[in-house]
Image (cartoon, rainbow, N blue to C red; front, side, top):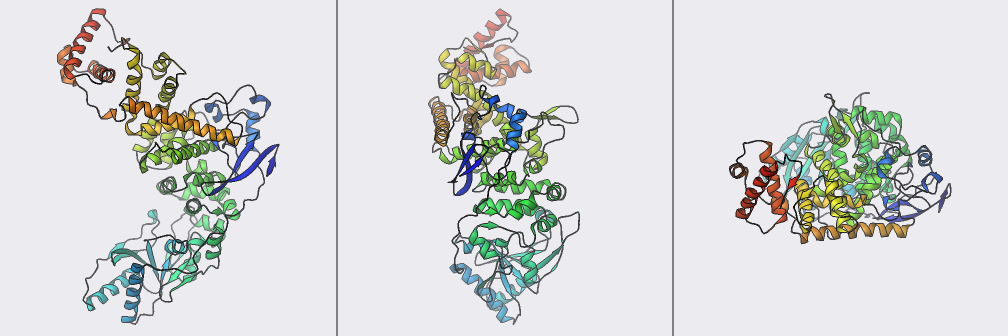
Length: 607
């Protein structure tokens, strides 16, 4: 147990990763502390005078009161215990295909009497020792280029009467972390990469090194992490731990650099993000020296100045699509890189408070827990990825900046397009999810009978006149789902995180109850949507097209036609069994009614 200003903490394992959870009297993962993180579901009023009367409103957390900022700024000194010893294999056991490949390579060396050492490098060795399957075999050669060895292999195949294999050559591409030419060819239906052992020399202002042939020692020590510096020597059928730390750190579950971490990160700052990604992937502990170096001003500046935003975005996307995305973002927060990675424009309004990155993390953590626990939720990889982004940036959804034309742009758009350089559709989807929550929340209130339908209409900005009360929910929900399309389950999940309740949890027990309430809300609304037959409503085609609307109402092309097309959709939502003829008849009646009452569009007419 750890005490900090009267706050009691305990440690528990969540999803196989160790993190700290507040039991009482405080909560919320947004606390500015790099040593531990807190759960959003534990969020409740702090035991501080200025909070006893008024619970937090989420938007206010962008600029919390001064007393709270001071409280959040405190830091606890806690020893982070390494992960329990990891079980690794005493030796590498080759599959049948791996045995065939390696024997073929040894046959080539023997046939041409080559004094060449072949080593499998990097991730394959690590994964095999961890007992995991790996089909990514990279072979490092000590005295020739990869292309030369591939040509020798083909020459051997010709002599033995076997089919020659095509050789692919991947040219040096520093922007994609390919600093030296790599040759590829298929052996026994598996692609193998061949590259020579290498050493790297870095210039002061670039992460792109000058490459040269290296020794096994130079190649091992130039690698990002000790657990990635292991070799499997094909000639001797043995594991080589040249740094003397690879196997030990693998057993301890530690992320450590072979050389001093600050030197390693200043040479190539991308290694910071790779260290975080591997730490999260295997649920390993980041070495304290590594964290201190990563959080240093020099390294954070180097990340911003020396790495292309495309590479940063690629690493972040790998983390978000990995098995421990919350752990990865937790590490990013721990080393004070959140605003370096997810950088904001200089003219953003309002400016984020120091602790707001922890709130972002808390929402992401809660969404991840819901995704894991909701049996009724089935998301594909893209939906899951963007759901996590939507939750992560939820506290930033009201922030804007002005572009060169003084137009207001959501700050979330800037993060995707400029900070991460991800595909253009990503910010569009995430911003749509954020906007959909503003309509989903009043719908949830109505479905749970906490608000009347007039409240929902007002919140959704859609006043329905001459519509049966029983049809209004179907119309409003259908219109929302047509906007968000197949991302409506994502928007609904995120909305449950924002949905207010009667009280705020004050213990881990209430924390679990809060999560259960989110699950129940999601299932309740999802079942209602299914019952209304709206789960794929965006695929429904209008019963009357624009040309027919113009003919029936004697309209010219223009905004009036679009307005009536929307009304046709609303009519279809109100009368799901209606036919095209019935819809056309309604159009004639509604058009005549509008003309008669000289309605200038101040009210929607749907009957």
